[in-house]
Image 1 (cartoon, rainbow, N blue to C red):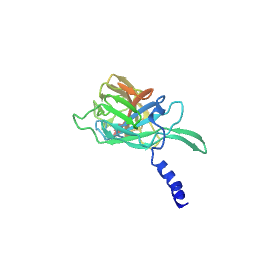
Image 2 (image 1 turned 90 degrees about the vertical axis):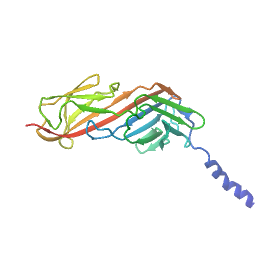
Image 3 (image 1 turned 60 degrees about the horizontal axis):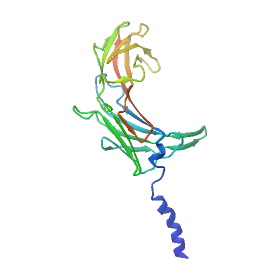
Image 4 (image 1 turned 180 degrees about the vertical axis):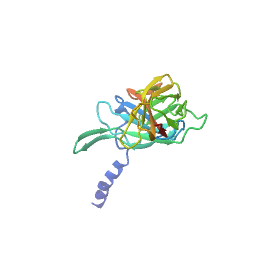
Length: 242
């Protein structure tokens, strides 16, 4: 009788030792989203640490990724942030995406700029290769930004020049919280031009640039599609002339 009781107690412990969740094959009809966040509110020509986030976006169902899944970016282990799956709240039912992240220091000269992501769980693998994912990105002004005049036309050089943007670059003044003055922005290749509006108040202010390059994956397997984007936000203190 005592032996029988011990066996019953041990069964759930043995079951809990196995992987929890569903294998990568459950995401085959979904997609992979790879994002690189490259710093906020630094001077426009300064490089920054970056954080890379990989999300598995479910397809037809809402699977939970097995907890033994592993992700490597250029051979470096990424942290499993969430296994995803169904989530119920008072507002309704939601489907969360599994995600991994990796924080990297600013790239040293000559460091690899391409990114190769591999997610595996012993039963399958998702692979994506994105050229220039880890490249150092800069927006270098062609003129001084210490003092800016109303109606002035500013020019910037974006690097790397191979980048394409999935939305128009945003450049604006933000003198106080929740007050914005947009510059009219035009892009010609890697050159960004911006016209200063006449209604921006004179005096000390903050000039911010938001850039969102969209990158193209040269390899994508294990899911139906792969996308990659970069978030690059910089700001500089400046003065608008009277």
